[in-house]
Amino acid sequence: MECKVKWQGVEGMAFVAETGSGHLVAMDGAPEGGGRNLAPRPMEMVLVGTGGCTAYDVVMILKKGRHAVTDCDVRLTAERADSDPRVFTRVHFHFRVSGHALKPEAVERAIRLSSEKYCSASIMLGKTASISHDFEIIETA
Image 1: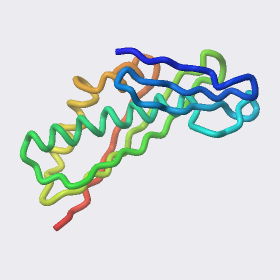
Image 2: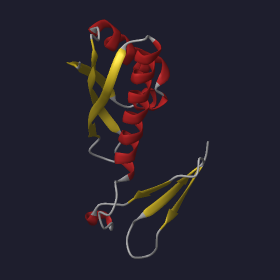
Image 3: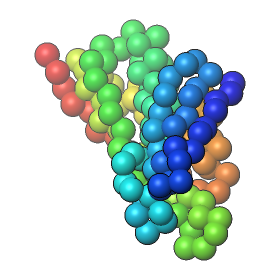
Image 4: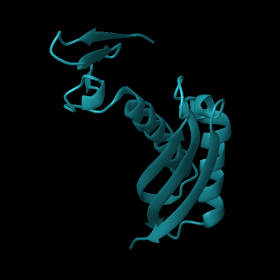
């Protein structure tokens, strides 16, 4: 896996990343750090990637188990250290999983498997941060 990150010039702190799969992602810094607030911060992208990684796992695990999952979202809330390096020190994942007759045990198992075995991003974050999870199930017809 690889990517290229390129600074977008002397007027700010914007960067564009090109992923190994050929996709572009913009990032920018906060105004107090010289950025212009045109795109997500790099550390926000860490949370975005982690949320995508774990949501993917949860949906895939439920689908492979033949559970009638119709939607899934996860809200991540995080705290960072006060001094450099400002690593994440706490991350909470709140999953909202929709489907027909989803069993809480199945959703809980999918989240646990993602967090303990499959989601590389959340497992890496767990090296510096306290990780917690909860979920709710929304019944759909």
